[in-house]
Image (cartoon, rainbow, N blue to C red):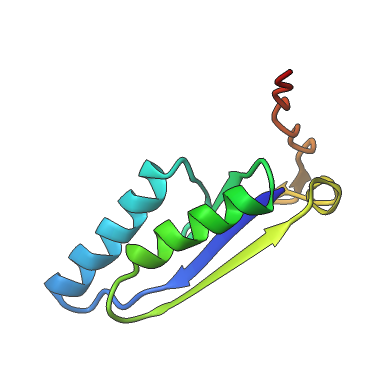
Length: 101
């Protein structure tokens, strides 16, 4: 399962820029990587993990702006198409799953 966090945060004042930067750093600290500017993603082991991340993100939300969180399955993620300019990129591999006995 994948979690995507998409946001539009105000960055007009110095305080707003500082809050937006702190939010991006919080996402990075939680293990998210930037897919695009204002779009971050992370692999989750399951719904419980996604729920935990959601609560942690909610705790670090800035005072203003819009934040959307979306979870998709590995199967849905496999269908992603990525382009750099007009060149199509190879699909990303899903991370290896850990099996604990």
